[in-house]
Length: 320
Image 1 (tube, rainbow, N blue to C red):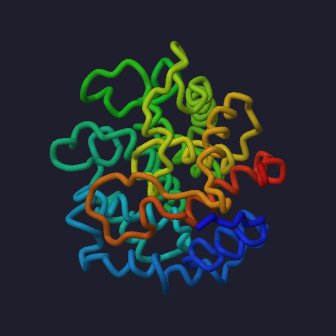
Image 2 (tube, rainbow, N blue to C red):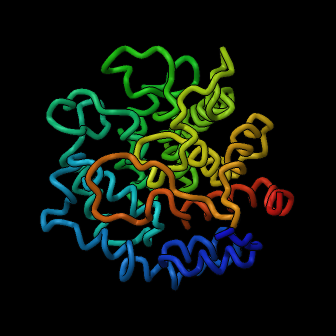
């Protein structure tokens, strides 16, 4: 059966039939209406309620902070942040406080386990800074995490968690996007600690992503990794072009022509009915499955639409 192309209003109506977390973000990002009533429902129904129900009595999810993937405290809090659970949610705030009190490495970042007691992982620190800031953690409690991140800035402007494991000398898009999301959230919260240095690091990390046109080698012009083009969601710690484009719209970045190759790939992946699928997922244990691989995805459609809207490409490209 031939898919029927939906216009923008029909797509929005389809999106609004999804989980309340999707509904909230559709109203906020596509319709310009910050529906706090919908946000407050995220903890009480749908995916938000399911995630919160998996929390253990000791304040963790899974076994501990980082084990197992993807049901650990770390990745569950990241998922809840991306659902846009209320920033004042007491369970999320308590688990972050627990992590800060029990999981600090010597370098001030968050340790993944006993083997990382001396040196934390900058990719995880970036993700932690993202959700800890989102859930309104006191700024002073995050100072050491910020310190540990800034200590990992590489000469090429980005970040790579493998510097402490295999002596990497080139930044990683995986790590850089996670750090950028954390730095952006810290800035949006109007925190001030080492802000000039953070803004400089954010600018250099953005340039690192743009220098690669979001997925191309700056030396050869070849695709760095094919899986960067997969629109996987949840993204976990892994990079893809839609995650990067969504970061740039969230940070209110101006259009840069180096984004165009990624935009063209994104448009080419759009279904005939104007939706986008969720593509190959990252293997690992999940609390539950939000969307089916290979099927139209409300998450990816929402994120693609807000990217096109921010860069004023939505009307121009909707019917191409």
